[in-house]
Length: 213
Ligand code: SAM
Image 1 (spheres, helix red, strand yellow):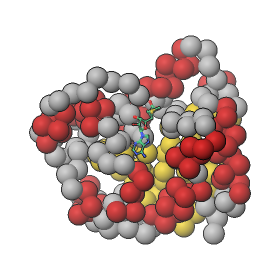
Image 2: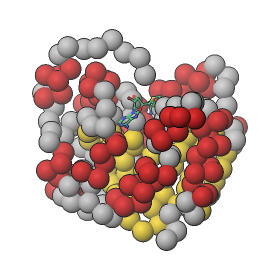
Image 3: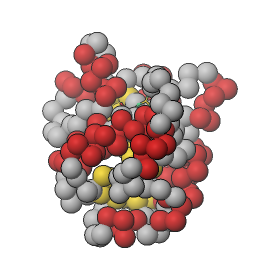
Image 4: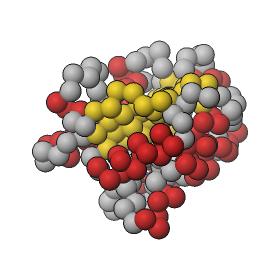
């Protein structure tokens, strides 16, 4: 995602500590205390401008959402979305998902969303794809038994790679769509990238992958 660097981004995030959680490593195993309830926790990795977590949180008030985004300037956009929506069940972490085990305890997360993840098209960068085996190891660790990853992308090569990665990992693949907007799925909340690509006439791929052991 290209965005001009905002030199005041850190300051802006600090103005809304109830939305952008500061020192998130302190909440490992304690996310329920942040939300002040026992509702399930769904995380989105690579949240971008936050349209998805905001829309999902509005649609599902009994689920807690945490958006993870590594670029501070982009987190400011997501924060403004959540502040404007005036919701308490969506929070943001300005961290790199590579370090996700620092922030969540085993079994603390109910679902992971990956939306329009960076494709890293070169073979030598395959390990950086958010559906690479090493990332799946980490997601499995922080998720409850039988947890699901819900994945959307416009990128056919990344989709194929991810289906293979989920499958090799022994995950159960469900609700695969090769053209999401022509399927009859209900309640789809569009991300910023999804809106842009679908307006350009590109098809959107989607699948759900469940850990089964
Ligand atoms: N999900 C949004 C959407 O669909 O509109 C944004 C998609 S954008 C292509 C990918 C986003 O993931 C970027 O904002 C990028 O900074 C973020 N990202 C990529 N790798 C990440 C990582 N390891 N940890 C946190 N964020 C990451």
